[in-house]
Image (tube, rainbow over all chains, first blue to last red; front, side):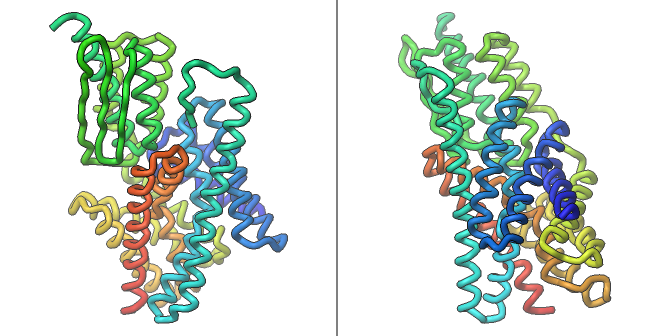
Length: 151
Length: 253
């Protein structure tokens, strides 16, 4: 478990450098990625399917991202990318592709469907966290004249 | 040209410059639109409209004179989240009233010309570290770790060089994943690795279109259907390029 936590921290922090974000967000992004991956690994080891695990993990990542973006006054996209990257179903997509190449179409299609479901779950988790964020914001401040919603 | 007229053009210049930098550096479409309109209203424009797609900006300001509109075409797009953050903080300062029009313009120009970003060596090292760590995260063995390090680092390096040689993103991704898969297969052949699949999956991760994908989701959520769908298509094409590069190696080796 500790091995998983450390590697996920380093892996997501490295993405900060690949995407040219500033050094100060290195550790924050690592924390975001680590917490998302922690929830994903915990849920899968306790016997949940990968799809709900991805949903919950991306939801939590979204919440943490909103808090970080608010506190550090940084565009949320930096944290979002770091949190989402480990959850992207790269392994499944690879297996699907491999089976397509080896002419095992029926197995490949079921793997591809699973990868699609996981991607949808990640998107849904982000949407849920966005909804929570907007509800909190609405509860906090009275309606203003200038009400262009800012995500 | 009257003073007020000139002022409107200056506001527009600052807004479009800010939008241009953000869009070229990989910000979400809705953030670009929002930032431009915030800057315009901070400088006293009565009403402004912006329409941004991943390939262009249309921005217009309404004043007492006839509406003025500017169109800006974006051809080059890179990933430089540092610039997005800087422009974001400048727009925050503008809305607080801390920057005059001229100051804001020069500050933005400085950001545009700055060569922010990490040197290639650091990026390649980061990609190598990420690849190795992803290998462990995907339940690979530590024995495969060095192979993933080498494959991931070489993958990003070949992506950067292919991009310099032929500026077609999908081709560069194809070449990079081809090289990664070749290194992984050779490593296993020579006994420096055990699981080809895990090494390839881990090393391909730095190429995965994570930023584009996240941007696509966030743009779709914000109601920017055109931008969201086109970014989704870009992500899909990238995934296809990576997949076909690996597939070719798996078929022939």
